[in-house]
Amino acid sequence: MDSSSKKIVTGDAGYVLEDVPHFSDYIPDLPTYSNPLQDHPAYSVVKQYFVHDDDTVIQKPIAHKNGPRGLHFRRAGPRQKVYFEPDEVHACIVTCGGLCPGLNTVIREIVCGLHHMYGVKKVLGIDGGYKGFYSRNTVPLTPKVVNDIHKRGGTILGTTRGGHDTSKIVDSIQDRGINQVYIIGGDGTQKGASFIFEEIKRRGLKVAVAGIPKTIDNDIPVIDRSFGFDTAVEEAQRAINAAHVEAESGENGIGLVKVMGRYSGFIAMYATLASRDVDCCLIPESPFYLEGPCGLFEYIERRLKENGHMVIVIAEGAGQELLSESMQSADKKDASGNKLLRDVGLWLSQKIKEHFAKKAKMIINLKHIDPTYMIRAVPSNASDNVYCTLLAQSAVHGAMAGYTGFTSGLVNGRHSYIPFYRITEKQNNVVITDRMWARLLSSTNQPSFMSAKDVIEDKREDEAPTRYFDNQCNLDKSNLVNNEIC
Image 1 (cartoon, rainbow, N blue to C red):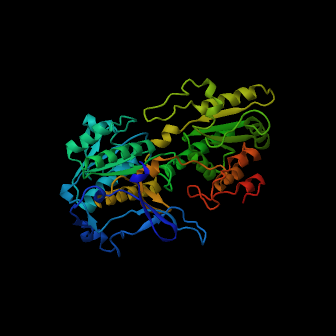
Image 2 (cartoon, rainbow, N blue to C red):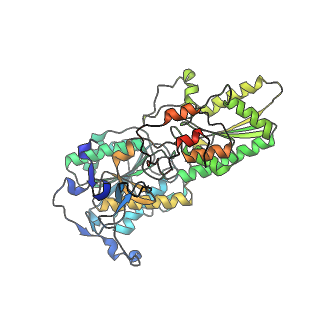
Image 3 (cartoon, rainbow, N blue to C red):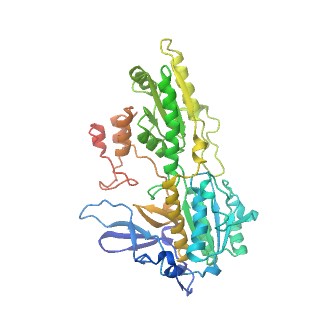
């Protein structure tokens, strides 16, 4: 999206609102209707039914007293006026990309939210991702059909990577008379949703396009966290516990656990912090090396001499540069455009075994555990189930109120409507010069694999001193150099 088409609203004292598109931006004189929630018995106890039109959510809650008010997003929730009558709505839901805990919960709550809150009866499930639109695969969805699906992993609609053809998809939406599209997927899927919205806007169609961000890696920017992440960390801990038992029970035992994290190591980092049994955590954002002083092999040997066992957690995207020369798939990508990675867990296991095979006096027992697909295939836990419900209901409220071209997400603890371009412009990564990573290093006692020179070079000259990265406090890098981490 070019800057001219972005909806930016400015106010006093440095207030900035990155607003989302609305039907009224490109379709004049649309009729509005009273929100049926005002007569809903469940909402009769609510003091304030509706979100005020001026309500916004600040992205960064920390500021200096003389600093600007900062960047805001539109607050999610029901509005007093809606742009659809219940009988008029013909909604559809599609899931794209890889599996993630909570997909079925989101599907269920969109269907039930539309039906029970707004009286919508016509909801279709698009089978098999984006290509299902023009393959004409559909599944009628009712509260009865989706009643128990939140207890299952995966997605009842099926999912594929790729298959995005904007023109064919919008043709199908128009031919079927669909006027609300709910798209559940990661950054690539949301980018596709943005193209769909732009084409719908170009054709002047009254069709709301709402996204629900999905990534088990938690690598989508702006939002506090993605659904399924809590479940993934919880499940990863089970594998770590098993690795710890195996390592502790054998002579010089090493438990190596590989978890998901193609470009971002959040699952590995949070599972490590939660476990406290991990001796080394390796993530894509923090390069490491095997040989030499303060290398991984030296640390493993020292840890085994001290404790007699150790546990290593590695994200799937870590260390790829170390094995890139022998990786045949280095330049290959999957249908979603993601780089195909070699199995770093298997590679590292072999390298560790080869290293210690040269040391006759130090026999090791290494167990490699890869719970990757077990983690993403489980149903969501209680925390994620509640989060999925709120994300789905927020998306429904937004679409009924005439908002479109937005993603529903949690920003600074409040549900918000975020423009597609903010979700797709970059990835959320672990900041290794941040306090959260420092806490991990303090927990594992592993080497940082970074020299003071590396840290200084990593410092961005144009960074404002009050800037914060993705809800984590920005660690003063000079403190890191001087080991003054609290």
